[in-house]
Amino acid sequence: MCQFLVLFMGLLLLAAHGGAEYSQDDKLNILEELESLYVEDDDHEVIDSANISWDERSANVSVNVDSFGASGDGISDDTEAFVKAWNTACSTSNSVFLVPPGRIYLVNATSFKGPCADKLVIQIDGTVVAPGEPSNWDPKLPRIWLDFSKLKGVIFQGNGVIDGSGSKWWASSCKRNKTNALQALTIDSSIAVVVKGLTIQNSQQMNFVISRCDSVRISQVLVSSPGDSPNTDGIHITESTNVILQDSKIGTGDDCVSIVNASSNITMKRIYCGPGHGISIGSLGKDNSTAVVSKVVLDTAFLRETTNGLRIKTWQGGSGYVRAVRFDNVQMLDVANPVIIDQFYCDSPTECKNQTSAVKISQIMYRNITGTTTSEKAMKFACSDTVPCSNIVLSNVNLERNDGTVETYCNSAEGFGFGIVHPSADCLNSQDKDCTLSDLTISTRTPEIEKDHIAHTEL
Ligand SMILES: *[C@@H]1O[C@H](CO)[C@@H](O)[C@H](O)[C@H]1NC(C)=O
Ligand SMILES: *[C@@H]1O[C@H](CO)[C@@H](O)[C@H](O)[C@H]1NC(C)=O
Ligand SMILES: *[C@@H]1O[C@H](CO)[C@@H](O)[C@H](O)[C@H]1NC(C)=O
Ligand SMILES: *[C@@H]1O[C@H](CO)[C@@H](O)[C@H](O)[C@H]1NC(C)=O
Ligand SMILES: *[C@@H]1O[C@H](CO)[C@@H](O)[C@H](O)[C@H]1NC(C)=O
Ligand SMILES: *[C@@H]1O[C@H](CO)[C@@H](O)[C@H](O)[C@H]1NC(C)=O
Ligand SMILES: *[C@@H]1O[C@H](CO)[C@@H](O)[C@H](O)[C@H]1NC(C)=O
Ligand SMILES: *[C@@H]1O[C@H](CO)[C@@H](O)[C@H](O)[C@H]1NC(C)=O
Ligand SMILES: *[C@@H]1O[C@H](CO)[C@@H](O)[C@H](O)[C@H]1NC(C)=O
Image (cartoon, rainbow, N blue to C red; front, side, top):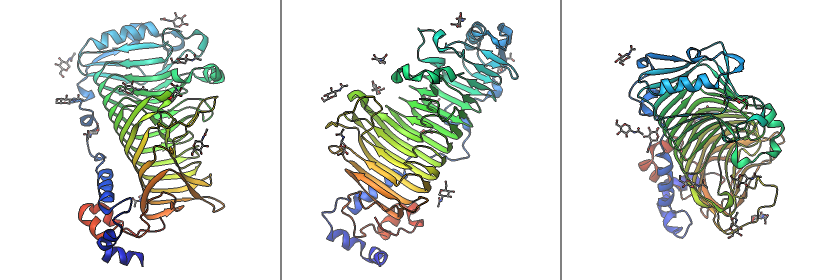
């Protein structure tokens, strides 16, 4: 019955509900903006999108770490050979910094700095391992193991493994400072970077960090650390723009992907996550800091047995915003907290007091999200009392639990939905409960949505 009304009387109803929180135009504008968020074509050449106008075939000068005295026996210290090979490769155009296959190279914490000559390929086919003893770690490099910085137009590739030998770090994790997490592989302050095919595993703490970069494409990367290893984020993106992460499998002891401050236009496609803490934006706003994250799209993901699904987490007292985020086509299997916004995030031994300031969260869309949850509150929108979440859009969400009881929790969250929304999200306090979202009007502006044939149900 509702749909007939929608079809024929949408505009009339809109007029009748002129005071509603979300007017027809509001909704259309929100939907249009969310729809327009970038997702790239599958056919695009990998290299184009990171703005590298050449490919690895033109790198023809091999700089093999073995030629600089690396032993590759997994026991001898190969740090010096790596540094010398890097210095040569970095200063030579068309070079390939080569870690050959079939051997294991033990390398200390090292900073591989650019800028380098044009057209550098970093080809990792062998295994690079970190020293396993935390007490011998160089105190001058507390945050990095393999740190690449100030590069422009480089390709990292190969079938090799980067192994942080983290087990002793995990065992002593309570003593460590989380704000200074050690990062196994870091790419920092770089432009136009492609990373494909590498395996990053057993990191001391964070596995792979992209920081202060612009134009990055990561594909076919495998990240693997045990599900109980502490603070081992899979891929951490900070202060970076125009990043594509695709066709990658991440299993770890913390967030599979975490996207934090000053990051924008981040696309994730075809991601497998599990075990882990899910795909996160945040945490943001710790210690009253300002954080901004915008234009994030996740399209096609499978999350299995993770402790969260799609999560946005912010601390009380922060400022800034998270805006324009779209989660599409996500399947969950036995995930706790499949859909969660947590503005009371508190990863600290002492209680975090509620404050009046918070990171503002708005324009967040969840579309075609299905599967099973292990927690009753399959959707949780726990937003700041003083800075409510707004424009949360749900479309075709269906989350089930074994015993059939599922619900949505809201605190200070506003939004609307269409299509199936299960568990129903009445608690998003949109005043629009009268089917004012009209097929007719929508079809003229966002044809993609029309295909779904909007049935404005439940919400
Ligand atoms: C991409 O290439 C164009 C044209 O060569 C150049 O103007 C632009 O600065 C490049 N962008 C990046 C991020 O390297
Ligand atoms: C490598 O290729 C470049 C062109 O891409 C060419 O100018 C250069 O001579 C080649 N170098 C070697 C060592 O073959
Ligand atoms: C690597 O670390 C070990 C242990 O701290 C140290 O003995 C060695 O000198 C370091 N190697 C280099 C090249 O700095
Ligand atoms: C942790 O790191 C922060 C930032 O560098 C520093 O302010 C703090 O004192 C450190 N805490 C401990 C316990 O080392
Ligand atoms: C977003 O990032 C992708 C990948 O780097 C890029 O191709 C696209 O142009 C960016 N979109 C905007 C609006 O900047
Ligand atoms: C957030 O990013 C901005 C821009 O890069 C930076 O100036 C600021 O210090 C960052 N804030 C935090 C808390 O890291
Ligand atoms: C954050 O701001 C609140 C309110 O002004 C203040 O009470 C608190 O001490 C601040 N916290 C930090 C870590 O600066
Ligand atoms: C919904 O998402 C699932 C899982 O990612 C995908 O297989 C399916 O094709 C999507 N359905 C639609 C209508 O896009
Ligand atoms: C903070 O506010 C939320 C929402 O009103 C409430 O559920 C929570 O108990 C409060 N936390 C503290 C520590 O006061």
